Amino acid sequence: MADDRPSPMEVLRHACAQLGELTGMAVEGASSFAQTEGGWQLEVEVMELARVPDTMSLMATYQVELDAEGQLTGYRRVRRYERGRADSQRAGGR
Image (cartoon, rainbow, N blue to C red):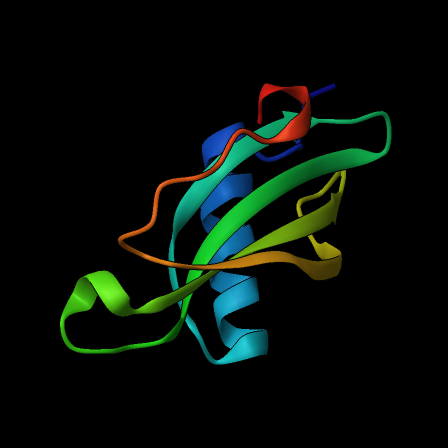
């Protein structure tokens, strides 16, 4: 029996496309990606508000949950930041 599950790259691409379509925001990329018991979990970086200069643009990290087939089942914003700002030390080394 052939394995019809999507590859990790297909899941990643599809998740970013789904989030962008749902939120109407530009997805910049994924900063974490992991397979879970029930599917996949990602943290995706999006631009929420473009500013000039670009280093002042408002960015956000969204936690995205997907099922085993790569369909988005939920998302939530977990932080906002200016593009030019470095992270302060976060718990868990993240």
